[in-house]
Image 1 (cartoon, rainbow, N blue to C red):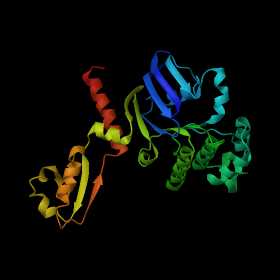
Image 2 (image 1 turned 45 degrees about the vertical axis):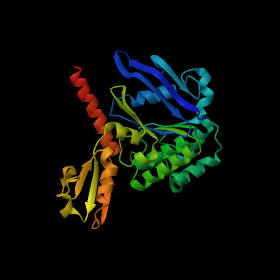
Image 3 (image 1 turned 90 degrees about the vertical axis):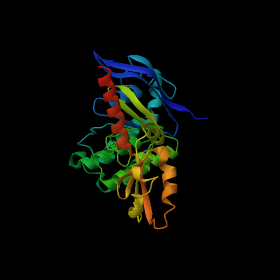
Image 4 (image 1 turned 60 degrees about the vertical axis):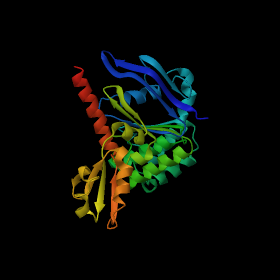
Length: 305
């Protein structure tokens, strides 16, 4: 039976007169990766603070490992949580090894893991150098190592790939996947949507403190019903005269179809012997994000908000 690790029920939060979150309900289960998406000020950081127990919800219920994380009774669960803030601030006079050793003591983690993680994030060769000499990318990798200490059962990662090159980004996602396979639940907040899709189970899109869309990427695609692009090779001369397909054409070799028309269109294309190849380009996570935000903004305008 799947166990719920994080649960928010009808949660709202105010900073004085400003409402940061508005009636949020969600669940994150064991071994699930949730992509938390939204513009600056959408409420993502507030949600993470609630889950960490840094602040208490104004309204509603927050439960992490079955407890309200804000209460003192939840302190025993905190060693099972790893957190990487958007702006990594570390002890600049200390070395990477000293920084991780300090956090290992706080989490009661075996210090042999410090060296393992320094190797994993490729800081082993400079582990005795002061953090103040590190580049932004190196500091980010050290922050990731700190978040991974103790093999946490819940990871909260706020813009974790900022400052990482493509190779380091790929290695980071491999580490996330390894933790997920071990049963960790992960909330991953990112503005860098390209490349994120393969690593998340669900996406949650926030705007002005409200959930505007939530579900698997496939479910969000089906709901949005954005066109799918099909690029063909070898049949340009035939498509313009094809009664069934020509109204889908946007160029001599590119068709745009809705989800319900994808399979019939592919079958129609395969009838042509001169067809060399075709590529199917479904709406990306980035285009879905833009669609749902735009739809919400238009709804607000129509509603006079």
